[in-house]
Image 1 (cartoon, helix red, strand yellow):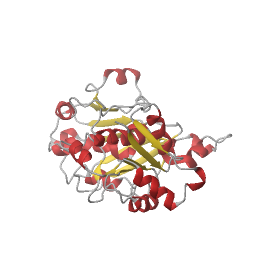
Image 2 (cartoon, helix red, strand yellow):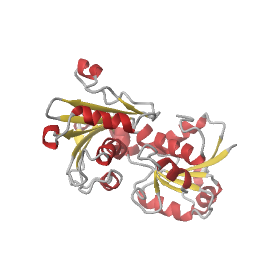
Image 3 (tube, helix red, strand yellow):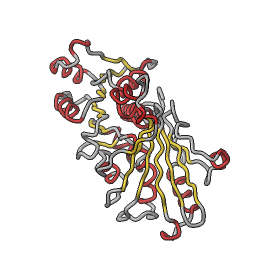
Image 4 (tube, helix red, strand yellow):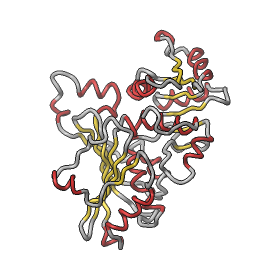
Amino acid sequence: MTHTVFVDGQEGTTGLRIHEYLAARRDIEVLRIAPELRKDASERARLLNAADVAFLCLPDAAAREAAALVRNPRTCIIDASTAHRTAAGWAFGLPELAAGQRDAIRASKRISNPGCHASAFILLLRPLVDAGLVPAAQVVTATSITGYSGGGKKMIEQYQADPPEPALTSPRPYGLGLGHKHVPEMMLHTGLQAAPIFMPIVGNFYKGLAISVPLPLAAMGLSAEAVQQVFEARYAGERFVRVMPLRDPATLESGYFDVQACNDSNRVDIFVFANADQAIVMARLDNLGKGASGAAVQAMNVHLGIDESLGL
């Protein structure tokens, strides 16, 4: 069976990558808008309503406008913007979130695609909150380093300019107003009642992301083994989530954590590094793969009831 797909915002970083994922798919017919009609509301509405699945790869306001154009009850919207990630009536497009999440994605015609930082954070914290190891009221801190592709075309152009701007050659912490756009979904979809203290950092590399969350084991009455066991139990059988060995020997042997090791995959790697009193739990992914376009295609596969890994 062939399914029709339209990407609204096909020239952006996420839209282009979705097209790459779909290019080799014989079960997908991609509808394309003529370049001169990209901002024509009537033509966009026609294509949105003609599609079985419509990806919105747009700024938040434009995504809300595009969603309002869809009248066809058979069209499933997968919104890659921030606009609907905490909105009622929208299924969160993270199949590994919890039991029943795949059913919610399959049943819904409105799916919000998770943010890149948020995906890694949620996959780390949700199991620990659900298991009671991290109290919902606890204030956690998180540091995330990501490649510059997450900033879109403008940031990519800045980093790839020749000669490069000196300020861009070193890591750049941002979100210093402590109001990063991913924080609401990080709270809602982990069950945390307090906003995490979140420090995102852009690095001088194209893609790859790793988020780390410290856990004071002794103060929390926990052991590293207990944390590891929760992750292993939660993600057993998940094809896109790999729980690495406790205190991963390969990483410790090299002495450095490879932020880019999941690039060009739809995989998330989860780690627990610890001594007797403290731990750092970490998750890494490709911010353009499982952190954006790959996640959107995975959600589409789940919704359509086909092999979840198809094309990924």
